[in-house]
Image (cartoon, rainbow, N blue to C red; front, side):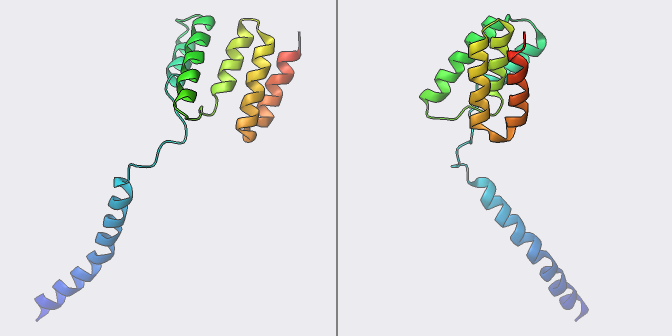
Length: 126
């Protein structure tokens, strides 16, 4: 009789764990949710920037191409894309384009406004 009672208690103890596992498995299996942003082209350029093996103009060209591809697919650019591109434009002396990109970053991601305002102010200084 103790064996049967012990088995029943063990089964009750495992029931919440098994239910949670099934629930989490069901959520993980749903792969139909598209990503919020398309990161293609952005992350490799940040890496190239940090390595310093490509010129800023080469990076600008690659990012502009990535922008066209992302927007053509109807996807959104990720956070930091406009800001990074703006800083690249500033590094090659294209201040107007740099400001345009920094403002675009601020519009797309209002939480970045403090930092974008700082960069915009800095870019206006000689």
